[in-house]
Amino acid sequence: MAKRPPINVQAIREEMGLSKEEFAKRSPFSRRTIYRWEHGEFEPSPMAVSHLEQMLSQHRATQKSLLPSATSAENGGEHGPRQGGPQRKTLAPAKSSDPPTRVRPFGAA
Image (cartoon, rainbow, N blue to C red):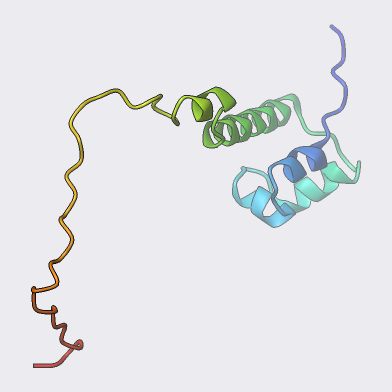
C-alpha cells in the first residue's frame, strides 16, 4: 500500500481562515494537538486525516454555495431571469393636499 504524503494541517486551517483555537473548537482535536501537527512533532492518524479532509471539503462546499456563479449573474441572479408573472403593486405618491403624517416620539402620550 502506497504511503500518503503528509497532510498540511496549517494550510487547511489557514484556508478556513481560523486560528488554532477556533480550529480546535470546530474539531475534536485539542489546540495542543493542532500545534504539534503544524510544527511536525507528530503526524495525524489516518482517522484524523480523514476528519480534516472532511472539514476542508465541507468548508469549500459552503464557500462555493455562498458565491454567485458568473452564469447566474448574467441571467438575472440566482433564480434566473424574471419571467412575466404578477406585477408588484406600488403605492401612489402622496398628494400635496394630503395633510402631513404626524409621528409621536417614543413614550409620548
